[in-house]
Amino acid sequence: MRTGHPLIDESCVVLSIQERRRYDEFLRLAECLDRQGVPGVYTEVAEIAESVTRLKRQGCTAMAALTQGVATLKRVEAAYRKGIGAACKPLFGASLVLLSVFWALVAGQHSPSL
Image 1 (spheres, rainbow, N blue to C red):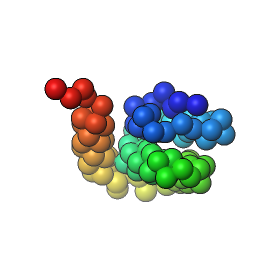
Image 2: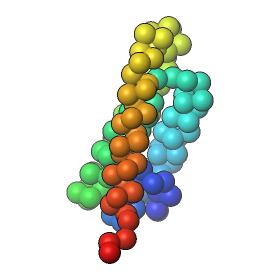
Image 3: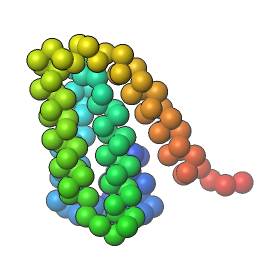
């Protein structure tokens, strides 16, 4: 099953039904946390997307990486709700920079060659 999401390189990645469900859960949680202004969300999304792509290229399952991503986002959310996240606000800006770089790399890999 194709991912349907540009963070994962679809030229080499096909997720199983179970992986797709976990990936969708991961993205829904990330989007929810982003709307709440929780810092560090995009850093985790980029790291998990890279990990999933690498694992699938190697012919491995990505369930463990996706499950870890969901668990990490839930811990980030819990820490943020306890007030720890307020001290991490500067990291959110750095996360956006990292995501921009990641998107540029992905776009560069998929651009047609001249």
